[in-house]
Amino acid sequence: MKPVDFLLIIHPAIAVIFIFPLIGIVSYLAVQTRQRRLQTLNKNLNKKKSKIFLVVGREHVLMGRLLSGSVVIVSLLGLAYPIEKNIIDNRLWSNNLFLFIFILIMFVVTIAALVILQKTRHKHWRGVFATLTGIGLVILGFQDGVFRRDNQWYMSHFYFGILAALLMIFSLAIIENIYQDCSNRWRSVHIILNCLALLLFMAQGITGIRDLLEIGRYKLGG
Image (cartoon, rainbow, N blue to C red; front, side):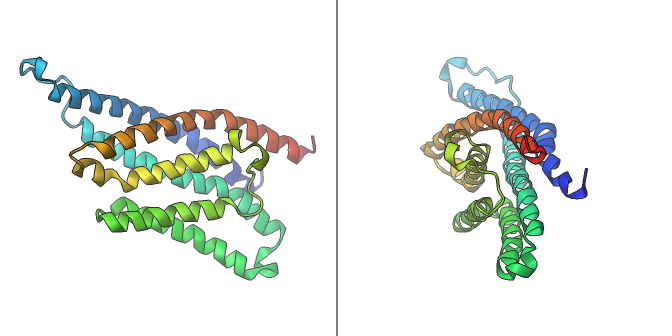
C-alpha cells in the first residue's frame, strides 16, 4: 500500500472504530437525558427522585460536541484522499496554482471555523462560524476527483455524509439556544434533526462499504 492510500482507509477506519461507537453513546445519553427530564416534570412521581444521574445531561452535551466535531473531521479526511489524488495526478500546483492554494486555504479555514464554533458561546458568532464550516465542507466536497454518484444522489454516500455533517454543524450552533429557549422549540428541532442524522449514519454504513468495493473494482479495471 502506498503512503497516499493511507488516507483512503483512515476515513472508514475512524468511522468504524470511533464514530459509530460514539453515536451509540450519544444516542443512549440522549434517551437517558430525555427520560430524566420527563420524570422531573412528571407530577405523578410523588416527589420520588429519578434513578437517572443528574450529570447525564452534561455528559450528553460533551459527547454530542465530540461526535459533531468528529463527524466533520472524518468527512474532511474522506474528502482529502480524492482531492489529494486529483492534485497529484494533474500536478495542480503547476497547472492551476490558484486552485491549488484555494483548496489548501479551504481546508485550513474549515478546520479553524470548526474549532472556533466549538468554543464560542455568542449567538451571532456561532452562526458565522457554523456557516463558514458548512460552506467550506460543501466547497471541498464538489472539487474534482471526489466520488459523488451525482446520478444517484438519493443513495449516495457523499450526499448522505455531507448532509449528516451539516446537521452536526447545525447541532453545534444551536446548543446554547436549546438551554435558553423556555418554549422547548429548539429542543424539538434538535431531536427531529438528530433522528434524521441517525438514519443517515445508518445509511452511511451501507453506502460506504458499497463505494469502497466500487472504487476498488475501478482501480483494478473491473
